[in-house]
Image (tube, rainbow, N blue to C red; front, side, top):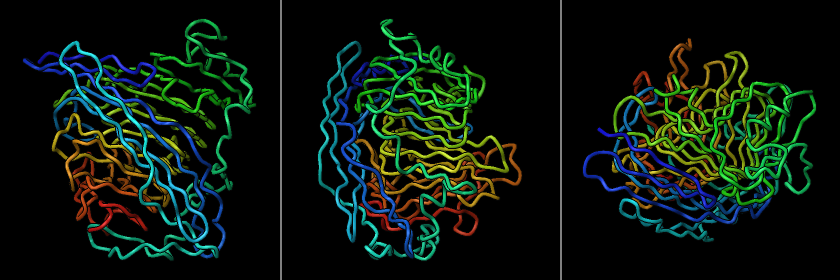
Length: 475
């Protein structure tokens, strides 16, 4: 079968794809982005008996469009076919005092065109929707409705949820607290500036990172609007902040298209890979636009791969299909910590995976149905080590899907029984106070493990929910 190529990410984050296979027309999809960041952070109402966060500002996140074929099976599993995908808006949640408010919705339209055609889409973010409840004034647990805990869908009790907060996941031995966020880009002073037109200190992101990699003091790199097609590798020890000045994260796009077969392994496919502690990314997009086939073994294509401790992403957009975001740990004895807030992550198979202690806060996790059609997909695939009780926490976020996604079909997650790790990790994940769309499998949202195929069981896995809402939240 003829392999198709795809060019991606003009400034509007357009993705243009050509379909693979004989007799297939090329599809062209585009979607305009949403309006960036319109609110503040989840604040610290973490004291009190439940230690739950309250008060979040709504984030309005527009879609990314995607096209091309994908699916299949491999290290992470998955199968499907199809082409062309369009994003759906995301937004954060806001809550204060006794009740939450907010959760901006909205969606974008998408239209495909025949081979060689032009984009046919526009998007606009909307507002209104269900909010997640904030903590009570006394720090007590929010009202969660009446969702029964079942053997296929375990729900945490409020007393247990009190020990499963953001700070529990990230503080660990040194009381790290990244929840205040990175602030505004306007308050930062860059030492290096990346501009493709030559108006900065460097024309490529990699060149600026190389120049900045000296000393122990944090260094700041401003990236001007543009599409930077390159693969970035950072193995230094200098803490870096890479950011764009504009809160529209689609204006700066770092993109590449390596796949597992081409690169020599999943971890080597990443458009942006870093093992450095203290990496910070803000107001930009990272994409892997590999034209993933509908079947076969060459399926994994990572956008961002981080193994360093204390990584922070704020208002970042990540695009891929299988294995979009790989947050792993450099040591089996000490998990690396990653904090993501007010961001947008999309894909279809295990598209958030790895062994890190990862918190995704007030963000949108978006499922793309384009390459899997009516087949099922998976959001999370943690490989949390058995010794680590804090794996993945998704809080105050929204699980969305494009308009073609099948109802009642998509899995929230599955363990990644990672090869070469002993004892086999069973993963850990908690989804709490989040809004789940109708595409989520209501009766059994946790799937059998990737790689090993180990059947899910409530006693054999550490997957839980707490206080979620939306059409996909109930059994």
